[in-house]
Length: 338
Image (cartoon, rainbow, N blue to C red; front, side, top):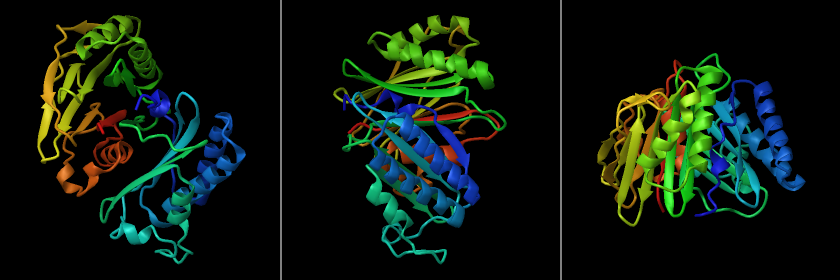
């Protein structure tokens, strides 16, 4: 898993997909991004099919459809990820819907089949009455292993950039996660979180509390941020967690248990108490979810049968859709060890 791409968590571009014109814009954006990433022409053509079909499905079938287009990178290649999110009507029989010939809109019904044939990776979760989240990756070549973590950020309504940021790293065997919520909104908040991500990726290997201390010292020239760092230690069966300010972290166990993790009050870069690190059990199959205060804690995974078995991208998309608020920047990061 050393090849997990740090760039996987780039913000990308969000679209509200309600009309054919927007669906075309999604396709053009995906093609342009793939061209900038120097992907082969054949894969760009296949990505174009995926983007057109996924966006077209939102226009034809969905309520409140949105789509994220963003870059993926490993050490030796690049790709494009599309995450399509809607609030209904949902699919009662996903397996049947994946077969060519199934349609609910009088069309040929080849959309999902075409998407899956061109994709390097894909995953989906859908529930009637709640909606569907579809995550599709198209890589330049081959099929890299799926990432153990994925995150999404979305700006407050009216802003073009989010003050929230998420990042992952695997350094000297330490698999670590960062969620940062820059103080306020807009460009200055985004600058603070970008600096937190930069410092996180460059910091020496160390436990979460030591990394948070580095970030606190680094962010002094910014407006500051609430942030938290978690480390998933598979050998010890533990999550190690340290946070400053209002970042939420939860461990969802495979047995249905839910354990909140503790951050201490403060603003990284400006004011803090002593940074403290806490350990929490990490059972095989457990999920770690971290998010900013733009995502409310009322989200309950028991209302989404099968969701916690899906990919981190699909889980993050579902949480952002149903627990993210439009009155604040929102960021969510999901991790599961193999």
